[in-house]
Amino acid sequence: MIAPITGFSKLTKNKKIEWLVDTYFLNDTTAINTLKKYWNSDEALQKLHDEFIENTITNFYLPLGVAPNFLINDQLYAIPMAIEESSVVAAASKAAKFWLTRGGFKATVINTEKVGQVHFMYFGNTEKLKAYFEHIKPQLIEATSHITQNMKKRGGGITEIELRDKTKQLDGYFQLHCTFETVDSMGANFINSCLEQFAKTFESAAKSYGLFSEKEKEIQIVMSILSNYVPNCLVRAEVSCPVSSLTENESIDANEFAEKFVRAIQIAKTEPYRAVTHNKGIMNGIDAVVLATGNDFRAIEAGVHAYASKDGTYSSLTHAEATNGIFKFWIEIPLSLGTVGGLTSLHPLVKIALQMLGKPSAKELMQIVAVAGLAQNFAAIRSLVTTGIQKGHMKMHLINILNQLEASEDEKAYFVNFFKDKTVTHSAVVNAFTAYKKEHAS
Ligand code: MEV
Image (cartoon, rainbow, N blue to C red; front, top):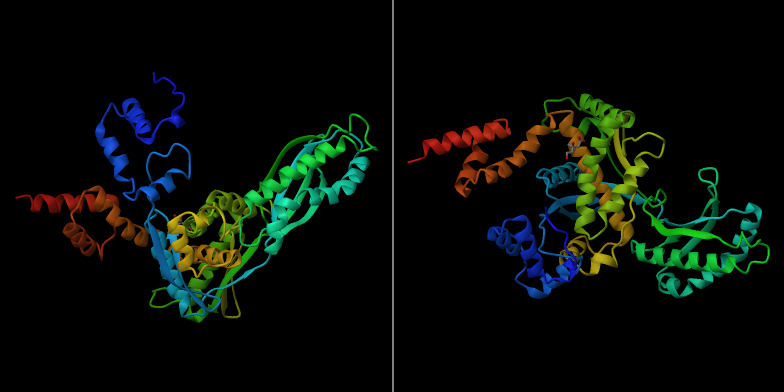
């Protein structure tokens, strides 16, 4: 059995790797070589990455791709995407090109409200708590002035603090439900700092509030934290065109395509099994841009999926209709994003990604990200209701299979050409490759 290690975080990077190799790789030095191969030769750059997290041993690469030709609100963008799934960037690029000649994407930010909550327990008279809240509210704002000063200068700050009675859900449970405007920053640190200050003031001032009994003075703060559920930090993106111009050279008729497309969306609206995969495809586009621009994709994922269930059933994030000969396809999603602070000013590739997008404001980035999600969903549904997904997907995956088989560059070129008019499956590639190798063995 492996013994636990103490003080691991204090070891140097080399010592950490040594311990891992001793413990888990039977001293196999190829593991060391692989880990070190991913170190950057630029020591300062490597140190920057080492210090992003604790216990860094190496870097973990993801490809950074670009999907060009995105026309959004009459402006052309090349969208950076960090993702490992082979067909995502190709699908986004294809959708961008398709809509480029059909008026492009239109996007609007509906609202930018962020949320944070102080969760606390109070077992006393509710009317007295309400009176205390009204009495203390100006002091809560005042006590955070050192935190909000800069945010206010940028046009943001605390927008509201509300007392919410949650005792029907849990005995004694109340909240300070707070909303914020954080302008171009995602605002997590700002919000959490404000909330922790609210909690301190709220708890301590209760001790000298004259209307409270001794028991009521003992407000118990449980926790103070922002919420990643931001249903009022909302963006909408859409495309539309005459149904008749929906198809190009496809074998499918334009009306039939529109009808099937709309049906596919209706199915994702009513069937959670389908909705999850449907929305996963949307997140392929969203996460890739969120990651490339240094934002927190876990926060986005959590908020978006909660929003997909807002009406009580998990449902499609996109909507479509084809009425009076016009096809319309749109998405409405909550996206709490930042273009300043956090990784945006630290990670050199994030800076490049943001520059590529014309140094967008957080609102502009919300629009771009929503468009990436909509485009990804358009490409997926278009394939699903026409050729099926595997055709394009496996074509993109072909190189991965050839790499697994350790094919040379010449062999890869040969097989890309060979499979041009054939169905790509894992076994078809393995069989064709094995036969080729046998034939060229001598
Ligand atoms: C694969 O990563 C995403 C899709 O499954 C999405 C969808 O089914 O809509 C193709």
